[in-house]
Length: 146
Image 1 (cartoon, helix red, strand yellow):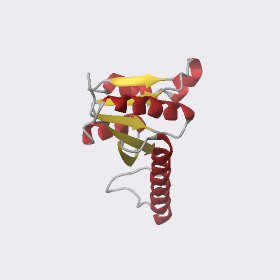
Image 2 (cartoon, rainbow, N blue to C red; image 1 turned 90 degrees about the horizontal axis):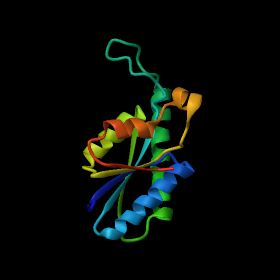
Image 3 (tube, rainbow, N blue to C red; image 1 turned 120 degrees about the vertical axis):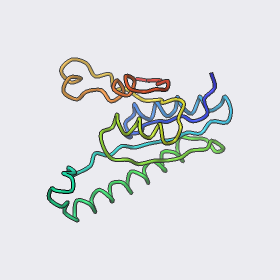
Image 4 (cartoon, one colour; image 1 turned 30 degrees about the vertical axis):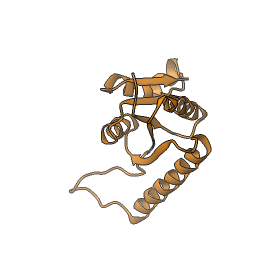
């Protein structure tokens, strides 16, 4: 099976960088585009049109974090992805599993390559597993690495 658009969620951990390196290896099969996405957690809660307004300082902080994430993704792309491989960087905020799946749909990915931290026991129960939630809900193949 040949893939043309591969989405790689990047949280800048060594696990996510291993997933990126695996995805890069898959680009050797032909004309493959890589899409790197970083999901930031919104520093405020959207309470809808009837709630309190969001302080400008929180909006500015969110914009600053998104710009920093974009810059960091571009640096990772320069350092990890060989010349000639088409790469796109995306930054989103929200609940990571949902945003990863939304980005996969938007960029028309036909594969998600995601790192898993391999948490077990209480740590897994408390922190959950982004990779597991993506696997359960994805409508396209998901390749995990550890």
